[in-house]
Image 1 (cartoon, rainbow, N blue to C red):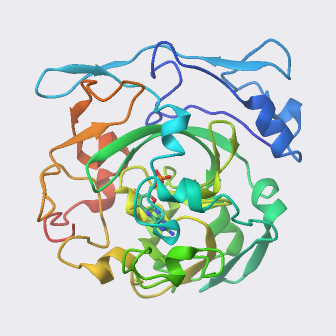
Image 2 (image 1 turned 180 degrees about the vertical axis):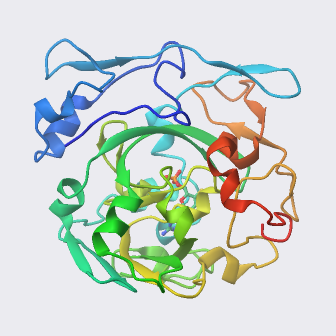
Length: 332
Ligand code: MTE
């Protein structure tokens, strides 16, 4: 079932851009056929409904000030940009390659295995990814470590719900994630040059309290539809206060573990990419500043879209307490 609930940290649709009206509820109903129309349009939903079949979202502008006093409108990143400007090295290290090279990626059948330090390990098949937990919409900023960013309406469920189902034991201190390894389907895994020199499978990790945080979701869709392959179909992580590389795509394994797991970018360049990867404008990447970012909006090449980066990507009120007393320069 799909319920839209608002939380303090979410960008709500009436906080995000003026003219954006997006349609697509109908498509999600169709594509995720196992979700009923009545569940979708529950009392909390923000949808204005003409009929269950013709749901549109109307959004208004949010002006927010960055500390250099320039203001920009926080807009949805248009869908065509969200699905054509990607980092998914398994399908090529250039931004436009995943959309082209992932087109025939097969997500059915799929198996997501949840195991490790838990009392009740389980596996979800493709359909169960959509039917086991409450799916909701979350409008989040996504800030890439490369200093570009987007605003994306995700569909997903709380990672905490999946972890609770497995009943972690007292040794479960971290959560380790793994992307599918399938060089026949993922050309970047077969060809070192195309795949950017990464050692596959792509792996990521979170501390258990980060994973249990309400902001952490497993996304199964965006813009009202199932995820396109280039965005990490059928299921990917989204942790909006962290740099985008933590948001591992096309996940096949989630393992509760006792020790801090290895993570792909940290293994590749430990002085550039840390385990925590919290968005932090005060700690620069060794090769570029993290003080500002280029927001991908509907504007063209000359749009004024350079904005100041916010601590924890603007989610500090909700997540700063996770890092109390930690030196964030050391634990970058
Ligand atoms: N997951 C896998 N398996 N492989 C990748 O190359 N790239 C990461 C992350 N997840 C990546 C991945 C990076 S660097 C970013 S910024 C985000 O995915 C980009 O997500 P998007 O393409 O949906 O915007």
